[in-house]
Structure formats: structure tokens, C-alpha cells
Image (cartoon, rainbow, N blue to C red; front, side, top):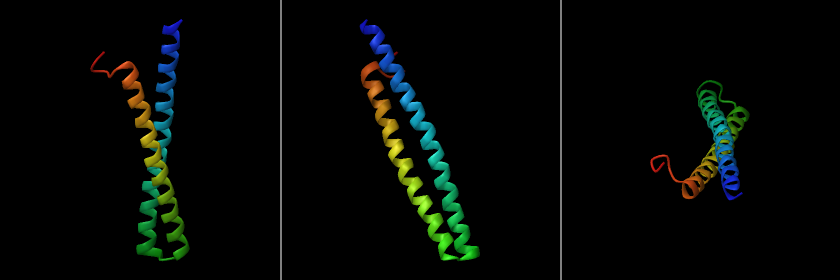
Length: 89
């Protein structure tokens, strides 16, 4: 019975880590595209509404990216603490 619980907990940690990493990857690319858009708008259009919108999207996505990255790493550290690293296996 105890082994079954450990396997379920391990699988749950891996799934949480994978899901968080997928979301973080998406936020990272949104932040990069928004930053490039902001730079292009500054040099070519110079419309403050577009600059503020692009900068806001970039800031929010960067925050979500860093927050999710921290969460993903905490899942990975929890997995390593409970089950060991791949090098130890």
C-alpha cells in the first residue's frame, strides 16, 4: 500500500512540474514577443497607447514567467528530495 502512494505522489509531482513548465514556456515567449513589439513601436510608430500596452503585456508575462519558473523548480526540488536525482538512480 505504501509503495502505491509513493508512486502516485511521484507521478503527481512530475505532472505538476510538466504542466507548470509548459505554461512558463508560453509566458516566456509572450514576454519576448511583447518586448520586441514594444521596441519596434518605440522606433517606428511612437504611439504611447501601443507602447504602454506592449510594455504592460511584457511586464505581466515576465512576472508570470519568473513566478512559474520558481514554482516548477520547487516541484523539481521536492521530487529530488523525496525520490532522488537521476544521477543517484
